[in-house]
Length: 447
Image 1 (cartoon, helix red, strand yellow):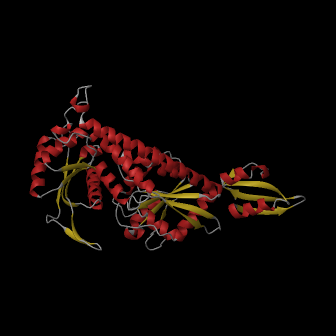
Image 2 (image 1 turned 60 degrees about the vertical axis):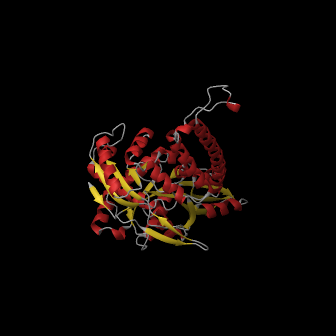
């Protein structure tokens, strides 16, 4: 497969307060192989299309894309020497600045390919890391991304010429030991930076843990929006909570989690959080660096899994999300599947998706279609998951009754001899706080 794009170098002017400068897009050639998808041509083509979107999100101009059919990557050049030289000729003819491979390259493969192409060569992981670096805005997000970048680059460090590979002597040239190469100096500097970032991230993680505990003490149910990147999670959060989260038609437009309150039709208030979007073959360095953020997903009461109903392969997106959820320990969380962008897909396709996944719901965050039903469904699922308990509350403990009405859902309230008997639906956290007043076995869901 070969797709030619624009061949003219595109430029756009950016005017600042005191200066006018020109930004030139890098011209990118994309390379994919069926080896990255186990020999599946359709999956490889879809992955290469996604790589084009990633490259455009990073700011590159895709001028050519090539898919090679092969069973396994070549150890030296990934695509084989002959294919690499063929692509190098194409790259030279199209004035390409960077070649992007749709798989993770080994350090040796990257070095060999750069020697053949005579320009920068990056892989899918490096491209995603670059996009994250562009979109990180919070202190925690920037620390996480920089840490992931350093972990990715560390095994790829190499000397920058003969002067950087020579042995350095001791003070005044005295040979007091074997010395060290510039590469070792660079590696030690990166390791120091990694340790500093890890300490900073540990502090930020501790702060996030405190915030999470504070939210638990409020006794509010927690819901997280998860899904493939660009599935419309931020638009959906804005629609149901009147939030003002950045919305952009690009991959990974928002990285930092946003939490907002949502009032359900039954009167309960819950917390809804947006999360970073997932993607197939998300670099493991990013998962490790963002683990403290992603692990919040494992601590919620319900996952609202948002899927782009207009996607060419929504099931692949679902599988990619489930893979990451399992890796961060959130694979067992209750899940509500939501088909977003129903206005962009054919009605029969949307109906088939809902029929194939019982309990799912189709909505359009952009137009508002199905949003009221979605909010109601979230409330139903949370109530089904909550504890229904019987409580015996003395008359002099009006504060407990007030807490039940404020933080739980009171189903029945009967006044007898010396106390008020209450049947209520409570969160696990609230039930634990009021354990001394519970006098009946707890059940899930209830009436």
